[in-house]
Image 1 (cartoon, rainbow, N blue to C red):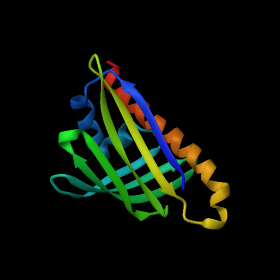
Image 2: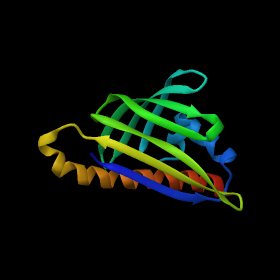
Image 3: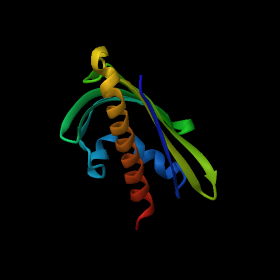
Image 4: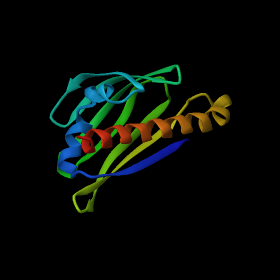
Length: 146
């Protein structure tokens, strides 16, 4: 089962980054691959969000539950319905000193079709990694560019 982990240093504190990560419905405003993110349920520390992504002309849809740990600036997410058999991960914010923070995004997924998984998983893993890197760069640019 493919696992992707990407990280990037950002010249901003966790207090500035975390609110941007929590506003998932705003991601399409600055992330090119996302068509839409809709919040369909919200409680104090969770949301259920419906996502539509366009990766190289392929539309991928899923609904996920997002769990927010505000005290630790941490978000865990897990698909509850969608195109993949499994899709889950987390956002981790780690202080680096000098006011900078490392943003780490993990994605653990399973395509769900065993006969073609060996062929598609490496391709999909590369696409997920590129898409995740693009997400981190978009957040970095949003925080660091005037």
